[in-house]
Every structure is written in structure tokens, then in C-alpha cells.
Image 1 (tube, rainbow, N blue to C red):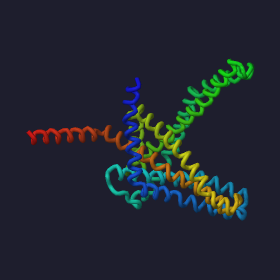
Image 2: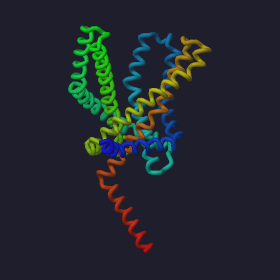
Image 3: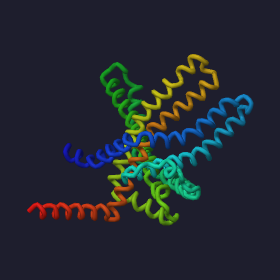
Image 4: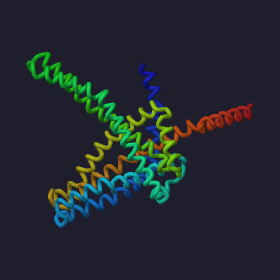
Length: 318
């Protein structure tokens, strides 16, 4: 059983390892693309913090909401597209051209944005249905266990057992919700690949996205879930370290109320995200390219060609 599970996870682990190797090999280029996404957000944060008193609290809330609803999604799509195009170049063994990676036609971003809205709605419905089927029974069971725990002596064996079971159930609810959310985000980044790295019409890109989501669906689920868990685990620690350590000198010198210190803290958190986000999109691009090659038969043609070369080499030796 253990060997069977390890064998099933081997392709996924190999994909994750290859993505990390590509990130290490082209670290500077990927971080530069992340910084290109970070720069306008950092400037906007700095301007808002510096002029918060002049703007007023009400207008500040309106501006922040407008930025979150309109500016942030567009910048995120550019980030996904830039990193995915850079990953495609790295996979093909080409040098990453930052200008080429970041040059995405606005109409392509609009089409990708429309698809993202539709896909987000579908994923929200699907995740809600899965939550009702999986999380709600666990939540009801934990509620029953909590009632039992409240009705018995906490120091008794039954009370301790109920507390342990309750803790495990609550942790299971959060972990399951975490995995469902991670799969949703990963699948969206994967489904956006045809829209951002290829020049296709809306109908063609939509058809390819749907086909490659369904193709090898169980294997895709494993990659989506594991990649999201790795990014969340590493991202939480790196973002926490960068977001806490970097602003410390400014906080000590200027104080927590200083606009400069607050702006620096926000930029530090974004810097942490810029460092940990690229592998996620590299993995989704790798998965997309592999599934596309397998579905079109390109990988089979490459295997046949490699086999023919080995046969020819053996014939020459003999």
C-alpha cells in the first residue's frame, strides 16, 4: 500500500522538484517579474499612507476598496501571465526575456478576467457543495462532542477523550477547508494558462481550459492540492519572517505610528509574497505543458523518436 501511494505521488513530486529547480536556475528573472508586480502596489501603499490624513477616513476606505476590487485583480492577472510566460520559456530551455514575459495584450487580460469571474463563480458553487458534503458533517459531529464535553467532568477519562476528539475534529475542519481552497486557487491558475501564454480566441481558449482540467483530473487534483499546501506552508513562514524582520529597524527608529514604518511593513509583506509565489505558477505551467503534450500525443511522438534513436545507436554499435 505504501509503495502504491509512493508510486502514485512520484510524478507529482517530480513535477514539484522540477519546478523548484527552474525557480533556482532563473531566480533573478522570476523575482524581477514579481517585483514588477510589487512596484505599483508598493507605490500605491506609500501614497495612501502618506496622505491618509488629507484624504480622510471615509475616502481612504473607498480608495482601498476600489483598488482591491479593480486594480489588484488586473495586476494579479499580469503577474500570473508574466510568471507563466517566463516559466514556459524556462521549460523550453530559452532565456527569460522580461520584456517578452511582461508584454501581455490588454485584450488578453480582459478575456482572462472574464473567464476568471466565471470560473470563480463555478468554483465557489463547487466548494460550497463539497463543504456541505464533507465539512458540515464533521462540524455537526464536533458540536455533538462539545456538548458531551460540557456535560461531563473535564478531568475524567471521558472528558479527556472528548477533548481530544473535539480538537482533532476542529483541526480536520480547518485542514479540509484549507485544502479545498488551495485546490480552487491552483486550478484557476492552471485553467488560466491558455489565456495568458497562448494567443487563442475566446472559444478556443475556453475549450482548451475545460479539456485540460478534465484530462487526468485525479492527477490534477493531487498536484493542485500539494502545490497549494507547499506554497501556503513556505509562504506563511517566509512572509512572516520578511514582514516582521525587515520593518523592525524603521519601527524602532520611527515608532509604530510612523507612516514610513507602516508603508515599509506593508511593502515587506508584499516582498515576501513576491519571493514565494513564482513556484506556484511554474508548477501550474509545467502541469499544463505536460497535460497538453500528453493529450495531443506530442509526448508519445517524442518517446517513439527517442526509442528509434536508441535502436539506431545499437545497430551502429553492432
